[in-house]
Amino acid sequence: MRFFLVVLLVILASCLHQVKQSQQTKSSEVNICHHSKYLGVIKTKNGYLIRIQHPDRKNQHFHLNISSPAKNVAVLSATHIGMLSALNEEKRIAAITDIRYVYSPKVLKRFQQKQIIALQNEQSMSVDQLLRSKSEYVIYSAFSGSFSQEKRLEKLGIHCIPNFDWREQTALGRAEWILLFGVLSGKVSEAIQLFRTIELAYNRSKNSNIVSSEMISGNVTGDFWYAPAGESFMADIFRNAGLNYVYHQTKGTGSVAYSREKIMKDGSNVKIWLNPGFSTKKEIICVHPKAKYLPFFKDSKIFCYTHNSNKYWEFSTLRPDWLLEDLARIAAGKTTKGLHFYQEVK
Image (cartoon, rainbow, N blue to C red; front, side, top):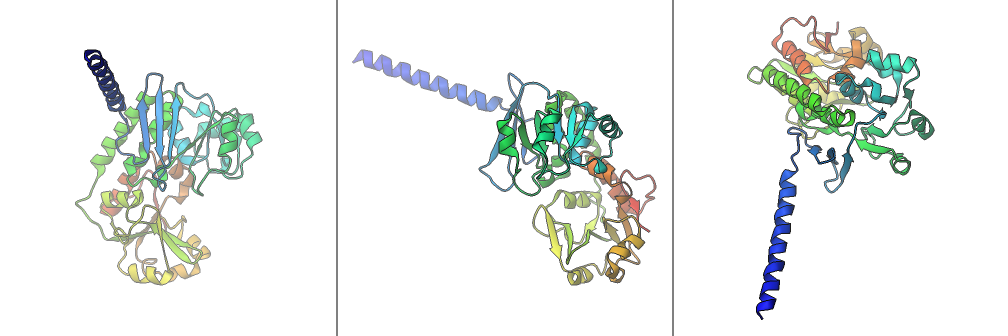
């Protein structure tokens, strides 16, 4: 009987030790991301664990252990180029989608030197061309859902990493995806330092206590006017800039789509129009002749980034502090010369 008691005590002690070890393992999993809703970066003994949550499928997670920097990476979005450029790691970019939408001078030069391959399209890109680029990782945004080539590429030893920065609800949550590129390039500490600089500058530029005149964003595409939903990262930036966004109370993290009639009604008191998608009023009228009837077309201040769209798409995600600074100046009615991204549309 005494023998069985001793055996039982040993088993219990062993179980308690295993539970304690398990708890210690879990507690040691420190996610260095603090703002992102979908990205996790955890330090491990051999490198980093990347953990990504799918925004719409709560049970779908992406896990990848990275033990050493990547030599070659295919980046299928302008924001990815901007993040690697900010870390001075353009040399790791081996493939992109379309050279026409690139801002980075170094990437443009490397493309001219035939060191970067253009794949043209995320969903219908050539696997043969990707193999020629010798890319170890493909970073994609999954705007159209799943990545059609993923299973095939994984069988070929190329890891496909989804990037959901565009689904984040805050500007800092988006910018924090720089840590993923820090891991891929072996510059985690530099990425952390850069993000902290951005975070401090962004919080310093917040202007929530001052609310400007009413503002609207977007333009007509087809039969509908598309604008940022009230829970999106863009609406969050509008709010922090002190802009009185017409649709700040709408639900969703993507876009809202409204009829022209609703825009005419809701925009009756608008004094600031952002992001019409064109650099001049003449261009707006040329594409959308009825735009001249919008209540805010003639008398409101109109601003857009289209004089240098490539710069905006590469860097506005990573540098929400620059974007916020621009919008805060627009909201306050201060001089708008020398803005980071925006120019007045006249």
